[in-house]
Image (spheres, rainbow, N blue to C red):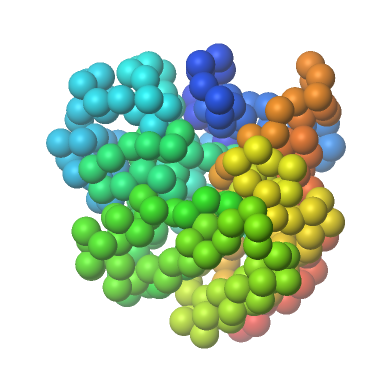
Length: 296
């Protein structure tokens, strides 16, 4: 059974002039999901506010982005991008808050988070939904521990920066980012060793929820990535879905392979994200067992 998906059309911005297509990816991902999976549980949610963003970011930086005085993560001042961030971050926040209620992995079809730091936006990331979602979860569940398992190919420098600025938040967040350690010359065996240790740590820390960035740019054919084959990407997702013993949220994160045609079926990035959903679905029985044990 497919877990709930927290999606609103306002989190997708078409036709942003950028090498990254992540701004418009949520809508295209949902089109593909609706082709493969019916029924699909799409959950409504509310956008976050500027005040919510300030749980992780410098208020002056937040205001400057919305006022068009500072470029967003795409390096432009398109007001649609900032407005959509209220919905993309809102999607991940809502999914994270709902995760403990669901045995299945919950999906937030969002990207563009982990390069956004306390007072900067870069790398196609305007605001850091990972940090805001963690802060909102802890706000709602005082004393909780939130895990961030960032398997995007690139270093989550923005998340690290926010945690360095916010010691109170950092005390309740367990952050693992693959991009801190790997480069295109790395080997899959090294990655899976790291992944196993990261999952073991999240389980040992007793995380109350884990946010999993299932970046498609970890694929060996990605022009900005390059480490795992298609089969190894599925193995990565399978291990996370079946071994993380906590409520689990996953999002899309990066992916830059060019499309091979004009349809969603010609997009290799969407196909990798679809495969992640397939592994989430295939792991439903195992996650149901974790859920029952946790709530016994």
